[in-house]
Image (cartoon, rainbow, N blue to C red):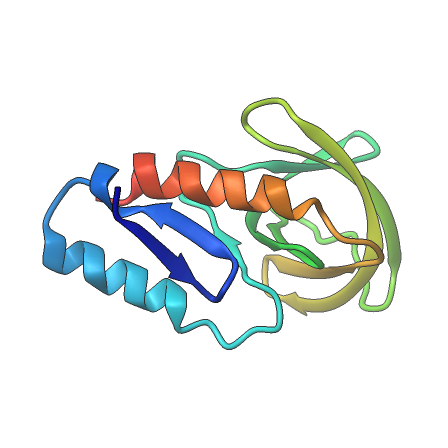
Amino acid sequence: MNWFTLTGTLVFEFKKLSGDKSRMKEKVFYMAEQKREYFRVEFPRSYHPSLELDMDSYEIQDVSEFGVKFKVVGDNPFMTDELVVANIIFPDEEKFELSGQIVRIDGDYVSMELASPLPLHKIRAVHLYLIRNHMV
């Protein structure tokens, strides 16, 4: 098997990727060039977790161990520095409780810094799933 490591922590099996190899290299290179402290996984429209807070649900755009960015449709009820307790529900129905602070509001997008990390094994598993099934 051909294994490739990004950012020293993520491992991908190159052999199972399909599609145009030049396009594939561009996407893998883009992922390797992140300059963030924690690796961030961006979600396509067809596969994204949701953030559930009280009776509302928000589409998550990207996630890292210590951060979540989600989209708010309509009136934005959030304020910078607000403390939030919510659940993140992945498409495979796995659910995690999280808490954190709103650190940025940019139009319809809200970024939250988490007080404690999401499980790295879950972030890795979701990222590997996306590479195998959504990178073409």
